[in-house]
Length: 289
Image 1 (spheres, rainbow, N blue to C red):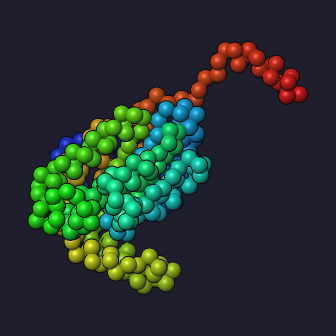
Image 2 (image 1 turned 135 degrees about the horizontal axis):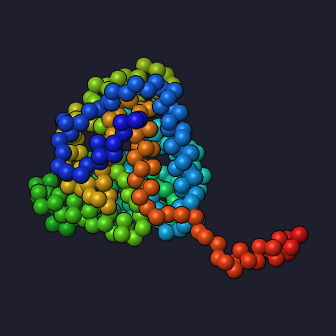
Image 3 (image 1 turned 45 degrees about the vertical axis):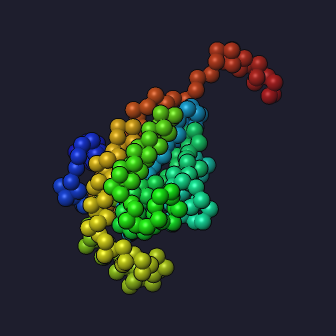
């Protein structure tokens, strides 16, 4: 996109979601979008190889959005040129019994990327201040001290949880993890179309869940809490980006473009061979012969 500006998508101040669009006005056709994405994913793949050799940074990509917003297909399309050992995807679902025996961030710590690699969180630790806000009864499953019923969950509880999450991200980014968080901003009408497609087309019916319809009833609540999340946790070390998601192809391009632009800010280069190794190249060649 000739008029691409990173600042149009990056949350750097207090925002209202209603001020953002769910679809861009683009003159690109689908072939053009695919062509541009292909160039970016190849560059990102090559960059990951360099980062692996550099061995001082890792990248954590967080994806959040309502059901059908395109997170799964984006992972498939944006990262498909990567070395399979260079990217790991974690899809965080409802915590299991083992995970509930630990604090809510425990499973996310375990899934953090190794140096030199990308990790994608498909749904993230922000589910703990999102779904649990819409359904606060879920907090009771954590068996927390002094919280025995929903009425025990105070506004201070949520403020503390935001502080914990911000500290978690501060800790990992100060230790070499580059973090970017993407919110897929889709219209309610577009979600309706995508859910209907799952019901009508046989090859998509396996994706349908009645739970999607249940959560759709809380649409406004989710939008309010997403807005709060970005206002309280978009920091320079771990920024949020609002991605118009009604057009899946353009959303994929934007995420890849933002990743590429942000990663260029880091001093990551291939290691330089020592003069001793260079001086001995002829000797090494002779040994191989």
